[in-house]
Image 1 (cartoon, rainbow, N blue to C red):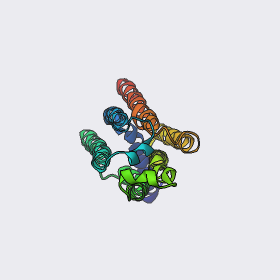
Image 2 (cartoon, rainbow, N blue to C red):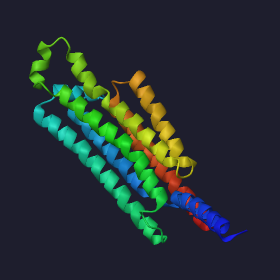
Image 3 (cartoon, one colour):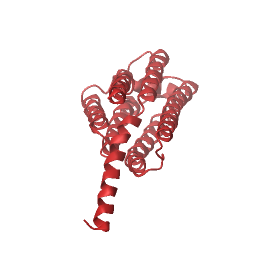
Length: 226
């Protein structure tokens, strides 16, 4: 074996080790805390809307709409920021740079889906809140305005599932399974239960993330013992 071949094999071994190490860095605790935040957000949403339908947002006041959107934006920012910070700290603790190739690939794979979800959400919200809530009763197409918001949660679920699945291609199987679960649940929510967005968000971003976090923590402990 010449030197060039040996170096090529060493690089391949390094890539394999980086992929394996990603599993130990997958943020179990942030997933649980993020899921808990989502459940709180769903409870507050139900109290504000008095409905499991996100489309009911068009019936509340403009101030309530802003409060609703601000709450979910805050939950999203806190969850993502905490996950990034936690993962970076875990990486440094194991002597791995957060800018290593697998992390960059995972971020590049996840970012386009999140960007699409953000743009679609912005467009749907702008269309649905274009008129004052008290005016909707005078329009025969009220259901169309409600649909703009009603479909936001399934869009979130499928875009997030797509991003997690593609990012998981640079890791182990567990995040890919999470991505598939979000895709299937999002498709089911869109096609079968679009009027239950609060429940869909609680089931997917809430409970599913908590279960995922618990599984990650359990497997991390098992791998540490061995």
